[in-house]
Image (cartoon, rainbow, N blue to C red; front, side, top):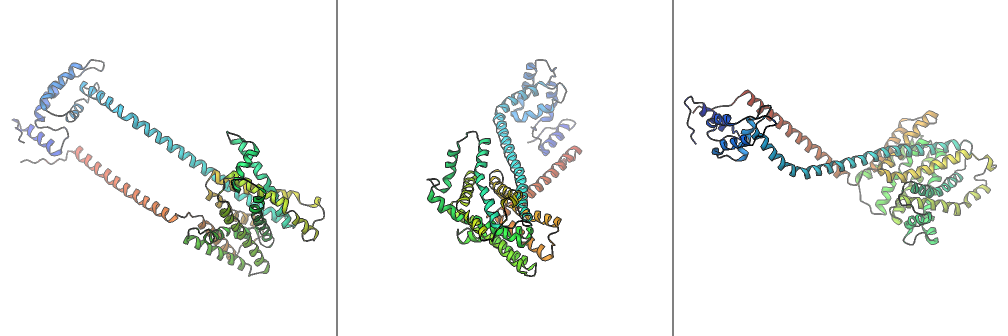
Length: 485
């Protein structure tokens, strides 16, 4: 398209500049119409009526045969003053009216999305705070229980009586749960109704005498064996060694679940089980395979094994349980222990295996402290699953190892050699490997891919910003090539 040149040639150069740079408001003959359009624009005061001036603008621009979108930049360029041009004000009002109806549902959707994100972030923060508190509570209660047992052994050594006494305190688990239900629930239920609701863990018919004997007896025996072997190990070994060896129960749970329950095979957990077994052997070797050391390691490993068997059988026969059902079941174990296992400490007393002079001579303070902390540990483990992430409960258990080590060092009851320290670290690493989820490899790959995508997006954004900056600088400096022909 040829443009007629003005006598001085200015129109031709300006038209060529606008055509080459691709100015979005350009149309042929822009330079010839620019002077007339400027003279036709009438400025008005902010409070004045601008209808007439707006009609003048439209009459001047009508012969140019341009669309509304192409004339909009021209009006913007002409309205740089403080009072403004009336055509720009009218155009803005019409556009704001159209945009208001479209942006209202979008803004409400964005507000709802922000509220949902805030709620999810708040829940994650609360779960994390509860998790940290429960980690400290679980590790502290387990360390306290272990250390009180060691203190009690100085004057009183009756491990089965101590096990029987502390297990009887499990009866208070369900009353503690029901007290929490009364304090927090909006719809409160009677004790019998809540008891029947939680007894569904035994079946649809609830707790019957047959189920009480059939389901409770094996679990009560395993519970007693676990605690009894743990107390026997504390007589032969330090609290640090026993707590570290007890952490091997995670490896035994995996092996039994893989064999009995046909759970998914995971190579990383096999590695963790091998590390646990290696730590057990190194722990026995730490004292040059001394007789007491080997017996103590056997007791601790037996306690971890019975604990693993308890968990696997619970999953097989009873499945998963909520907090109320777990409280009901543990209280039922306490009743079974009080009714059917009470004859065992009596027999041990009269056979002089576990004998004491009188009941007044018993260290009731240490016994009650041990039983109370043991009950608190069991309650915290079940409460923690409800309030926070289950993995944090396991981390609280493994933190009892450095906690007991710190107390043993302060009491100067243990001297850490290289072998014992290495065995403790290997067992703890194996325990932490057991906490990896089944899809840990897929989660890791997704995380790595997301990091790569973020880096590539940031790189593209940096390149875009640099190119935009260079273009803006070139336009400001006026570096535009103009062909002369």
